[in-house]
Length: 511
Image (tube, rainbow, N blue to C red; front, side):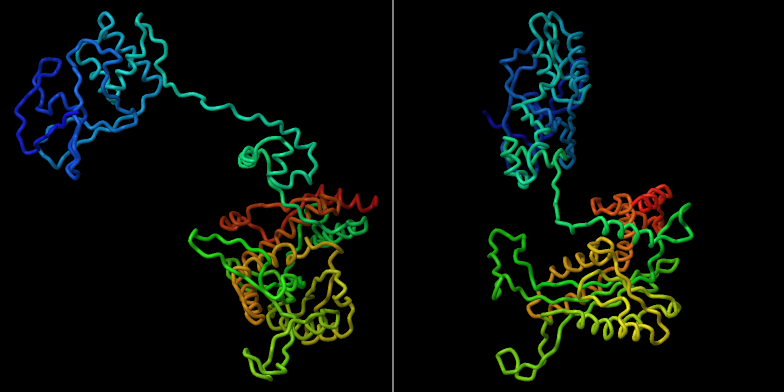
């Protein structure tokens, strides 16, 4: 094609009459269609020519098609080079296309369009001339429109129809992975993945839970009922505030996990982690004591509730000199065997002094309950040495056992310890002392607002335990505590339905 040169400094002198015979503004020659020079580019422009003076256009004579989504660059007077007006086009819907065709049909003469009709209709619908031309070319020889709507519809191969009822007949151990489930359904793994993304199939992580006997379930129900305000039963049952209960438990914290996932760049080298034995990764057991935090009416913290986290370690002097330390340097050694004597020692020397130091002074004379599980290493409730120290300095500190095989009734096992451990894994300690420092810092930095929510989650779990007749076959309920807290609608105590309490009491009487 020939190249068109446009002199931007030349004063246009040619005036062209429009279709009504009136003299219009000077503009570019009609042979240059939808062409505006780009002042910032030195590109060559191609000239597209077609005869607009013909009374009709045949489909095979169209030399150019402009995409309907493109912007139409209208020909404007170039009196001021710095001002170039761009007219944006729009996509015509099916109703507009039908209306445009009917308008063309009315203005046609013996199946042909007069001069200027195409441009007139295009300007009316704010589209380019070629769009109107394509609509007109869709007619047949009898001037009866077949269909001028968009030719957009269902395309491609049909979707694979999957009989989801077959999933019920597949054993659980044969649908533990995408590959095994796809193989059982006789479909591709990609199709199975799409079903999961669409929500038809859900992914479930199943953890082994402790076996509950009939007596265990009954004790769980009785424990949940004991956490209700006695004066509120049975008309308006509500849980106690649990502000005087301290939850304690032990937890192993490892230096690292056997397998970890990282997100890396393509050119990064794979990290290498090594230890003497993958079966004996360095670890430390911690004794954790946590109470419910307290806030005033304005939401300010009055009591953090963090009694302490105590590593079960000993400090021994090094027997010989090495490259790491000289002889006599104190080394941190994890206690290999934790028994009842060790727990009693840490309760008396660590936990009780921390309680007496941090507990609110206005509640010094009130009973303080330490809730522990039924591990063999825990001391008896009437341990003489513990009771003697617990009753000193005007305090009334007692021990209480939670129901057997019930980690969901302790806030530490429920959420707190797992949250602390996940935060600890974000660090990379190299020694035992670094691991202890990371765990203690994570414990101290954990937000008290979140630890307060765990106590509310505990009350919600107790309601589900009563609904499940003491079983642990339930899902932890969610009430969107974050949003309720922002709107000041989160209560410190959860209410129960009186009908549930009546059913629970009748169940206990019948069993």
